[in-house]
Length: 264
Image (cartoon, rainbow, N blue to C red):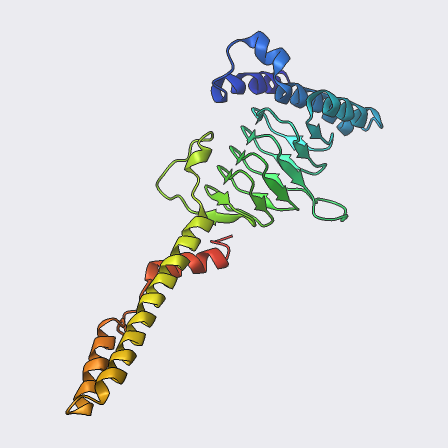
């Protein structure tokens, strides 16, 4: 138990550049205070003592704004940064060295009994305001973007963004725990792809309309109407992609991955 408390204390200096001295961390970090109170309440809960574990949890919520059910299992070195509005359910399991920001909910999706809250692996980062709901598994080194809603299992070493949460693979590149600004925006990529597709279709439609207008204007004047039709057809074909080479191949892949959940 003592080694776990020390790990909770030391991890703050590693992950928070604002932590300057031990006295400030000890008295002014609600995440640490809520976590230490929870560990005592969790011990009483496992022993089977009634009422008092929930009372300690309620007092910790009043003092810190962080609500952790005494039944939740939290590994060592977990850092709850700021923490206001964090809710952690009864059957939640959090692995070692996790990082949780303010406004996070690790909750259930109904009134079912048994395991009904998420299980987080080691080194998992849950961004500000994210909601992870239900009896789901988040693999090791997972990153949950701010404001995301995760309702399905997530493999290890993945980044999840969006509502509902979608996995965005970052192969070959390490994502630092605090670098939320580097999370990709899958919604923006899909919107950009759709806008490009619309612009391409508008250009093709404009070409067809121009060809039809030229055909109508020149059909009566042309000495050889068949030649005029063939010329207009050739102009249209120049702006039409071949059938064996479909356009916007990359955009199609981005859209399909978005609609399919990008691997979740």
